[in-house]
Image 1: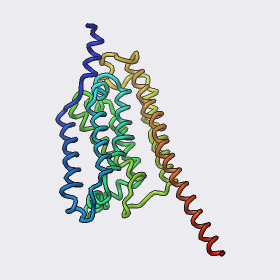
Image 2: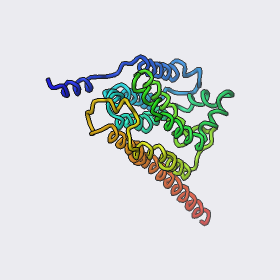
Image 3: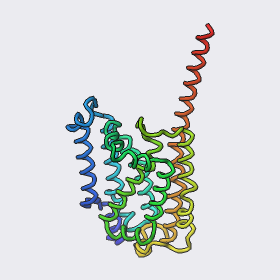
Image 4: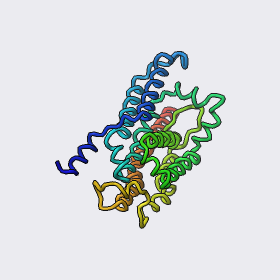
Length: 281
């Protein structure tokens, strides 16, 4: 059999069962369903079992495993920087928002707003702080020494992606949270937050990766070429994915926020006009 065909079959068949990955997923599943199930009445006596949110959580776990455990991970770790960037996009724009949507307020409030954590929660979820934390973490992650260390060790790689997911929670929180005791951004500020985060803050990293005249990561330089002519070409495509496609992904939440804002203002104006009309009668 042709060597390239054998390599392709090996890649497609290689699903991850790394102890760190499976341990994190199982811990998340057990903790979540204990909290919303047997321990629910100890957390909130009036809380009902959140069927819809439980379904979203299961979806988030499946998505996370497909990102981290499917052949996509092996291709990202061993062959292509551009696929690795795609992993980051899926973690940030699919897995992280799903996990946030899966958390009922009655479960989040005692964890994030107790006497020990509320000040830290308010600090970390300040939009300026959240955007800077996400951008700084993303930049540090791409230092060649740190990046290559993760590529050489799957357990470290999964651990780094777990931290990436946590930082993504912080990033999305100012836009998605619905807790009464935390400040909420005006819809216009949410749009500005997403726009600035997707453009200005990430430009230095995007430019460094995309317009470099050499490949930064030895693991990809030494990897067999299953796509693209060189590691530098792959790196440049990865930079475009990180920046251009990310901006396109941002358009969806920005559009949803805008139309919800418009609908709310429209309904408020309609109600006001109706009340004015009734008063005039």
